[in-house]
Length: 109
Image 1 (cartoon, helix red, strand yellow):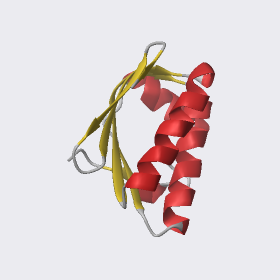
Image 2 (cartoon, one colour):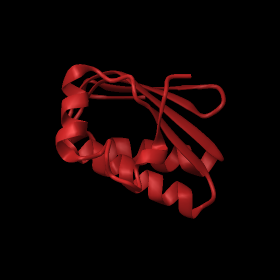
Image 3 (cartoon, one colour):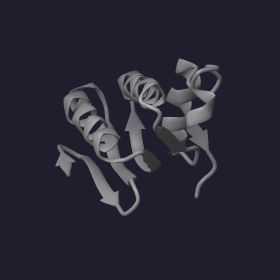
């Protein structure tokens, strides 16, 4: 699946690999990816190491997906191996330290 420089590849077992850039103009596309993933899998993992740039809307969508997954009794995880620009946005927006988000970040599998 691709949307103007933002690519999501689904692998077996509910694993999704994200590549490129995910900023505000990709939000509708990414929201649909998240909703579809959570509808079809009881456990999802998003590999973010191929992302080159994101903005805070990306992390807002991850946050909402994490809440939705928890409410539905599903597992939602993201890898912590991030490009420097993506790590900076995550740190600036408080997503690594937010108590309700700590459980979505995990080491690479």
